[in-house]
Image 1 (cartoon, helix red, strand yellow):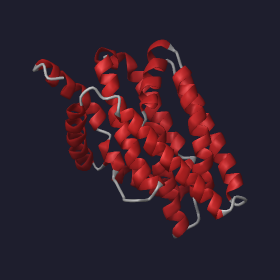
Image 2 (cartoon, rainbow, N blue to C red):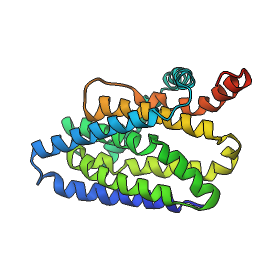
Image 3 (spheres, helix red, strand yellow):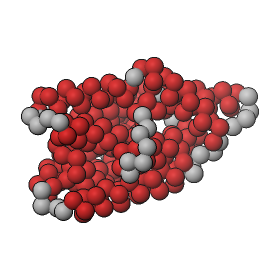
Image 4 (tube, helix red, strand yellow):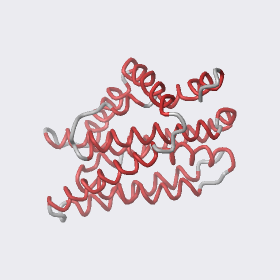
Length: 237
């Protein structure tokens, strides 16, 4: 059982989040806002870079559309929102605006920390070989992001570490079962879908341009290998 990388990742999110909470009241609102905008712009640009790795944009489009239909059917974003409400009621006594901020912090951080291809690839590497270098790099990035998130959005960001523990830990434990589908094609398209979702997070939660139910895109990762197999079957990849 290889969960070292995930444990390190959870620790950096908690440490960064606590540090962000300590800084929160001492940072001017304009500084916190600018940090969030910078993080949003970087996430947007990084998402574009990841999407450019696709070998067939049609594969990504079909996988996403099917994934969104499944996500809306399964109401993934609503489930995450309800989890955020439950945690907020248990651990946060402030209501009103603070309640909404808790849920937004939990959702935004959970999605940002779990969606990227580094989470998928790093968890699989850790589970299959015990190589957690990719997750350590991701952990450092997440730790700094947690500082910015927690200083602006509060304690909800810390509880995103629970999602990382379950999500990345689960991927590592299931990695041996996934080995047969992890071709170079699948990895490239995983990155492309992750890039689009990161753009969605930037637009929706970080830059606050337009609300997008990004969590409901997640089943696209499940559908993707089947779509690639069908495309290869007909020789159109």
